[in-house]
Amino acid sequence: MPEPKEVVIARYRSELENHGIASSGWWQEQLDLCLIGIMATFGWEKALGDATELSWWEATAAGAAARQDIPISGAGQ
Image (cartoon, rainbow, N blue to C red; front, side, top):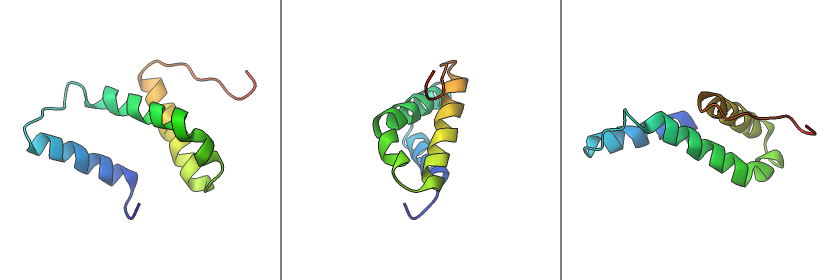
């Protein structure tokens, strides 16, 4: 992407709000679950690519899981 993921995410939320969709009650939970789902689906692809990209996804998915009280385990556990 030509801009940081955080910028795209913030713009998407802003546009929802601009179109009359209040997001304060559900935004973080839905974003967290989407990020976890994307990592579960495409994590293998991220692991084969750029280390910085994988690092962002690992940290972001781990933070999302922690916020949602979803336990994660390391490899081999």
